[in-house]
Amino acid sequence: MLHEGPSAPRLIVRQLAKRYPNGRVALKGVDLTVRDGELVVILGSNGSGKSTLLRSIVRLIEPTEGQVLIDGCAVAGLDGEGLRRVRMACGMIFQHANLVGRRNVLANVATGALGRHRTFATAIGLLPRSELAAADGFLQEVGLVEFAQQRAGTLSGGQQQRVAIARALAQRPRLLLADEPVASLDPESAREIMALLRRLATEDGLAVLTVLHQPDLALAYADRVIGLKDGEVVFDGGPDAISAAMVDMLYQRHAA
Ligand SMILES: Nc1ncnc2c1ncn2[C@@H]1O[C@H](COP(=O)(O)OP(=O)(O)OP(=O)(O)O)[C@@H](O)[C@H]1O
Ligand SMILES: [Mg+2]
Image (tube, helix red, strand yellow):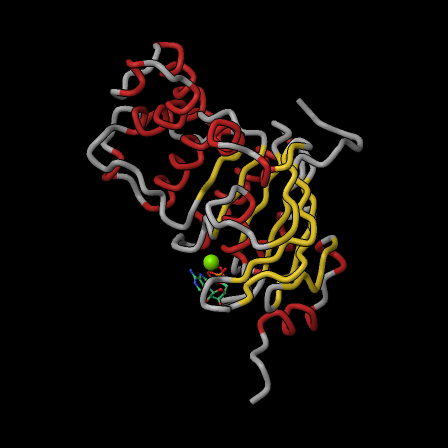
């Protein structure tokens, strides 16, 4: 299914700010949007606020000021149940896949669906058969169906990351938030993961927001790049519009 044409952004961030209790200001007035079908990459040096931004979107960190709207719904006002639902709609992917190594790949993927079923059976980790079939489909989507019965801990780093993406898909998210999903992967595996995220955006219409430390991958795969420096957006535009000087500026240290 191809998604075209303008739609209301799936994610809107307005004037988001975060000051940590120790006084450190990690985000200052951040604005951004991500639409369905769009792959947006955040670039910025260590400490520029990228993880704080991603975590603030789903209130894993409580922002100090500003607004986050997901599907037009203000995340700040949500109670426990509402927040749980919004988090289910946001698949999160991190640098480390964090799979249960001794369980098989299919079971790991299926755990992504647990939050959507609130029954005694799921509370003890049992899922309806339909979810296992769906998990198989997500494994197919990430190209790992032949590994379904293998213990997750025996997979390579790149394969584990693909399982983590399949697990996120099992939540049936409309928005994927990924924090350095390719940081521990070799260049070829990194490209595979980026191609997968690209395909999830283009073909399945997911809104994808990912932090990367590789400007070349951003330029190759992103619809838009957001440059974050000292907690502020200093660039937001297409990969064609980002100059070498801008990349240098993003990673440049403060003058001594
Ligand atoms: N819990 C915390 N308490 C105080 N300061 C924090 C906390 N977490 C992060 N910071 C600070 O906030 C700033 C942004 O951190 P953040 O982890 O968001 O950066 P980042 O862009 O993700 O960096 P990296 O590329 O190293 O992952 C840094 O100066 C960091 O030291
Ligand atoms: Mg980080």
